[in-house]
Length: 304
Image 1 (tube, helix red, strand yellow):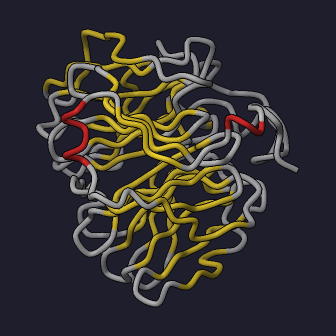
Image 2 (cartoon, rainbow, N blue to C red; image 1 turned 180 degrees about the vertical axis):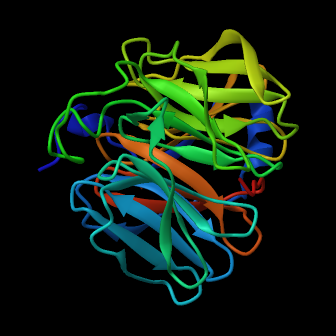
């Protein structure tokens, strides 16, 4: 059963424009399509170009689903999924997944073989890896809050061995490095197009999006970038022009590189979890929200 966070009258399916130049992000129709319904908590969408499918996680049901962009069909991609959450791809196109169940980052190669590439830091188990992104140098960056070990709803209830929530980077030798432990509930993660800025959402008490300066795979100069409302930000992506797309309770909020709110893509669900660009030209925005998967065709695009 979906928890109630917003009134029924607040549940809308529409695009709201706050700045005139935001019209350039959308095609004229601005049609938001519901592609699937039946999840308990839809999360972590990623487009697999080689298969032309969109894969996403349904965390509490311990499964991954797919949407075939060519045949307009859906099905089960993986069950059980080790309570998978966020998904991305590496430079070779392999599926990279944040797993709550094994408290790990895994890789699925082209033959469907799954291997763990990180499950500990400093000799201790990770908490419950949440979301991730691959940088152009092949390093994999991920967030590691404790949401997947607090209860048995999205994983296996267990104490944290680390005692903090972190943002990490896996280098090309599969060594895991701590980037920061200064965010209460690190969740979504994305880079600016030039990879000089790292964005991390905080689903903790602050409900903020933070930005960091990136230099030689080190981060510094933590700043508040934006404060999506209602609710808190979760998944996050950045388009080719540096606009930041962040989920919030009411849908996807789009911010300029300066942090100005440009537009909202509202979906009629209680909470929106995550999003990604996909399709042949990477100009479809796919949105996972509570029990459903949605899409909207855009003028802008992103391959991250």
